[in-house]
Length: 133
Image 1: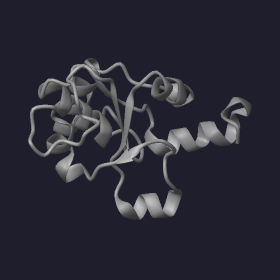
Image 2 (image 1 turned 120 degrees about the vertical axis):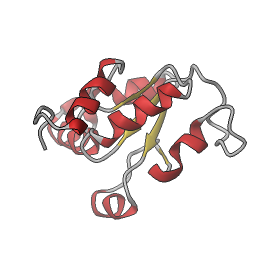
Image 3 (image 1 turned 135 degrees about the horizontal axis):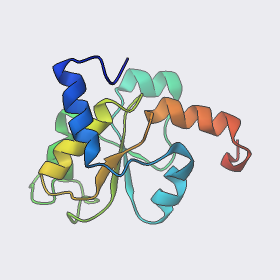
């Protein structure tokens, strides 16, 4: 999938990413250790196929905003404040950018995503001696 094919969704993706301080796969563990909430929005089929993301909470994409909005009566207990850093992870880093952008609109000012998604994290894990793989 290309980010710059001229389509409306590509323009929305570009706009969404302008306000994100995207996390690199190599930095995910340290960001999480510093208190970020890492949220895996991959569908069950992808999680079963590729595995779980260590330390991430799983939230289905269709309820993400309700579970993370600190003002929602349906929020998760981890969604306790609007300034908490939240890192959304999808399969390849497209849907997560759109989701993080939406969360920012809801007041989660430090919502962002993982650049390249779970697939990029898996490549980094496989190739990096510091990943512990």
